[in-house]
Image (cartoon, rainbow, N blue to C red; front, top):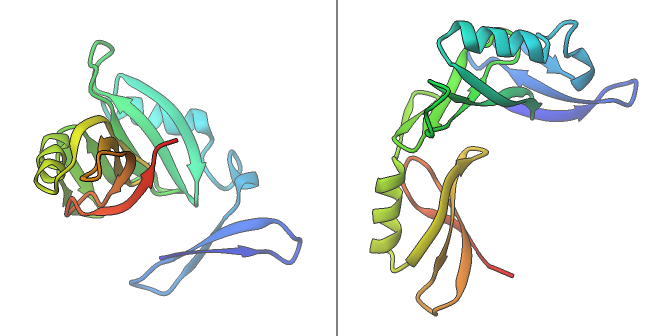
Length: 163
């Protein structure tokens, strides 16, 4: 579990709660490179783990996020979420699905089929970002909408008119 808070010094921190032990870990942007691994260290770790291409590495909401590819010629990107200190992979999702906290994630093809069964047409720009599948499509009222889709069920959690 995670919570955001403001420290006594006035800086923002994300507090991670270890569900098993109840231990707390405060994660602050200023800790990168000191008590937290540096961006370079995260990149080195991912390349040593077999990823040939690593990009968009950032500490976001208390966790490391990165986009990776298994080879320099692969077009299939995978979005990773890593533990802030141990760099353990907590989620790994690409077009073929993956896992989030051990739960299976639907593939892009499964999401597309689910959207079509729900009445959406002309689905485009389907991609996994920030823990959700996102897409643009025509809804049943024939309006273009931006969709946010829950990755393990395919349920549309947000439909917003495209501007």
